[in-house]
Length: 506
Image (cartoon, helix red, strand yellow):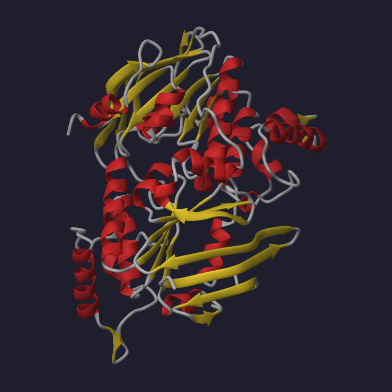
């Protein structure tokens, strides 16, 4: 009999009107990395929430070390040696590393926290992870990759036997992703069992021993990773073969829609220039990619163009063929046909507690105002329904709460919100982060459709294959400056060339 540390059998979970999991079987061997893949909404998160005790109302059986268990909360699953690290990290930014590691598990002596013990133990955990950070460092001062390692240290402090990593590399630059994968291998070598959930299929094939595919709440396939390719994973996830992710565009590229020259942004709080002397332009029907490491200034550049930066901005601004003052605020930018879709859809792009209709029309309500101050809800809802259908948002109703949608469908609502403003220039910042290959392909097709309508599109992405596959031209940023510009139509640009420009060859 194979040495399984965990077996989940015939797991079925229903929500009102939806069967999220249907007779799912999933098992983890001791000391293996088991990848769990599937489209958004396939049931991956629901299955892990059952395992970690967040969902208690389900059918089926869970065996841990051969013993039947049914957790009634996260505390119980953690006590049994199961720890889950979500994509949205659960750290408190204002507390230091040591305080976060022991949060909820403080070591007390005579009614007082034993800070000496906690500091020493934190140092041991950080050293074990090769993380050169002082335990007294405020978490908010750490990079996202370091914060993720603090989360892992927190899990190790609970003496976990099974570590669940949900989209661990989605927010990370390439170097931090490589460090995390190295850490996963080290933990595996120490005997830990790891569930690795990711949409980055190249990483899944690189790190996993076994891969289980979920689709529509069912187990489609579970076998050794060595028997898979990216194509077989995609086919299993979406239920069909995707022949090409980046379809060729044949639309005519027109006049310059947006141009900035000698563009600089000064951050007065931290007393530094975060964007310096940037020259950039985008034309009608063109996709311009902006690549670079996290912290290179890509988002700051986009937000300053959109009128969303509080720091001092200087430079020449040309829009729709005319030189003019830069937009004072986001409302002025949207009114003039420029829209920026944020990289953090949950924090800045959407109101998760509201419905699809509310979110989709939030930036274009003025189009539905009648008699000065009445909103024509019927007209608004008809327009939103048309847009949701065009973007193929999977939902029973546009009155569905956005927080209940999958990541891919949430991103489509962000696009609906942008398109309903009828933009002439659209900036998409990490538009496919954390979503599955099927949804990504649909968004790529939507970008092509936008360019056919003459919209100028700027795509900011940390995924080099995406930048290369979508863009007509590519700007690379490093240290707030443009470090390279490439025409992707004149020749086939390589990832290595983009990487060299992004890192300076380091």
